[in-house]
Image (cartoon, rainbow, N blue to C red; front, side, top):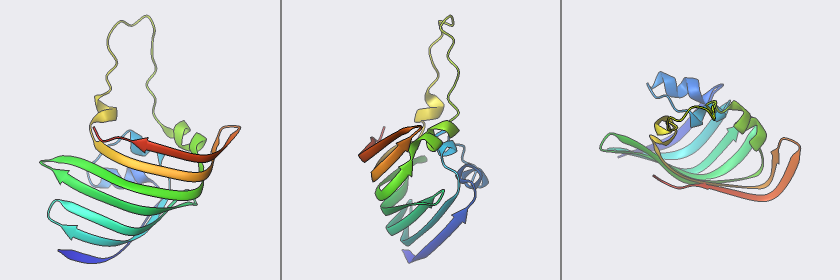
Length: 142
């Protein structure tokens, strides 16, 4: 086991993941990220405690765990903060165009190829012109 302090900063989460050979459509929602945490590395698992993350300048605190289950990447954790601009995150997602005349099924494999069990809560969120209070989201593991 290896433990220590992690400090990470990137202007683009998708570019950072690309450097590791990962391509995640959901990560496209994220822009600049700075992260600090107490890290523990074990075979096939990285745990991050006392996480302080800043997404485009908005702070989230919590815990995260990254694991490799037989070659399948999994992320789990809980993050909480004061505010988050959900509209900006959603605008960055590469949502596929849907043609009602096309009878073929939607290909959602690229959206569901990872296991993510992440809970995010904030005191206030912005979604375009709407202002929301006491917001929580949850992404269940697949």
